[in-house]
Amino acid sequence: MKFNEIIFAAADISTSFFRQKEEAPFDPNAPISSYAQRITIYSSEHDRPLGLSRKLHRDQRLGLADQSSIYVEPDIIAIDASLIDPAKWYQKFSFATRHSYVFDKEAGVRDLTRLLKGEDSAARPGMARRMKNQLEFWVLSP
Image 1 (cartoon, rainbow, N blue to C red):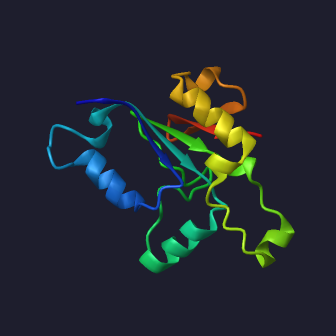
Image 2: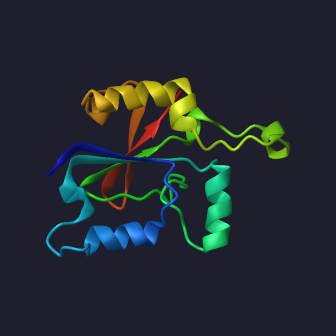
Image 3: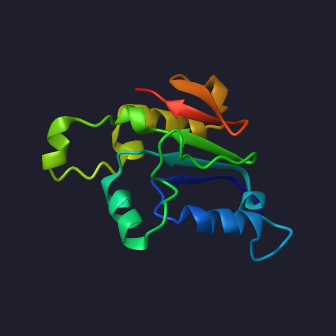
């Protein structure tokens, strides 16, 4: 069985564990990406709960990344959504978790809707293509 789309939004999953399962899953011939037509990962460098999780687990989290640490693979669409919820000085002193950026920021909801409708990343407004290790990822702007 294959899903059309699997989406990881602000995922509190170890990046190394995810990479291990992608490279050597339960079935050696079936990486995670084989269970869907498309896998998309939304991440942000401003996600406070994932920052705490990274400290507790002593491991990078899949949903906590900036453009230098974003998880990129050929069969996975990686989206850095940090720009849709930029850091503001007063948030350091507030209880704002900044964990639901894909679901409570207009740009995140709009992009998620277009993604679920099957639109390609390159065709979606607000998306800028970037490269890391000769692989592409996307930056979502407000």
